[in-house]
Length: 520
Image (cartoon, rainbow, N blue to C red; front, side, top):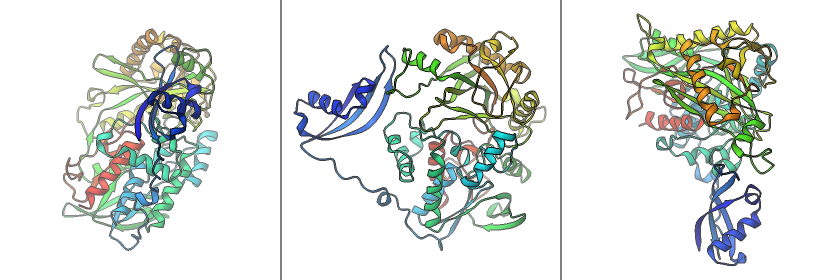
């Protein structure tokens, strides 16, 4: 007999398999000896009451054993030899590009990935230079390189995009390549930036072992076009030009590859300006968020560091938290030497003393439209704010920052609290860094949030500018059915950079969809 039931347990009980068995036996009116195994299907935290509970959706096997799980190597057909198969070019080795490559292998095609950045081992040195010296390599940083921005942006896997593809398939492929199996059951799955590089390396090995190719430190320079059809690309490799030929190109370059948007514009390939969001990183000591969410002085060892989700409407603008990182770190995510961009990430254990989140405001066409508008207006607006933040910070990637209450009350911060941003902060009025409408929308929303979550409103918190890479400010159009660019046959815009995804899982699913579409 197999029964599916829900258990509601105290945190310490949820960690006790014996307690789970006893409760299942009681609910099913059977003896504990008759329960052969319990599979957890879904796990979530319910912190709505004074006493947080763990909710477990479980599958209970009574008088029988659970079936042996099919091996991932048998479920996914990545063992093929596609070295001599028809090639498909993939521009970008982020989540969209890597999952597109894996899907192509299953379908019997040879993926050839072109990646401007370095592999994860070499990439670490450039990240160290960013944090220690403020030196940004435009081709190897927190956004560019093997695994894309996903490798060093926390590994949060929660998505609302379940209609776009098979979420469980994406999670299982990640487990196959080294992620912890907890991501298959947690309501808000998370890998951790410290573990993601090994997962990415394992995915690379799968692609190469099947006969695929990955060309690192190779930058897309131009498209080879003929009669409104794509026949290949020209890429800069080892200081010289190299041609890669294919009539199918998946463009998965991420939301920060500004040179690609300029290339498309220069080649008269249709692109569109797209609304995005802009704001700050807000950081609190983690214990404040724990106390607020769990209604206790100390969360104890059985509860994970707490998170939050904030949303408000100011006129026609949405203001919301984004990419919340409990026990996390604020990272310098600039892709050029003269800009400040901040992002956040957490290690797998989320055991750092601070919690940070993007707090951003929607940017509308009226904010960036010029008298003679172009598709790159939103991009130029984004870029100008990042450059202004760099000038305000004082160089070497020091970021302008202000204590939370000081910002709301328009006071200068004489000092700044301890924080996780390694390059360092500069006390600066964010009203002089952010566009007026963005600053005012943040200010009004923080007042609203303070009424709902009082301890969030504290000068122990710091606001750091600028959180600006929430999504791409450019959309590359594609046909809804074929996923092909409407005026360039053979080009398949894909993932976050093209405006069709918003995180690791949604980008991965979009990569798979584009892989399937491009071979039809």
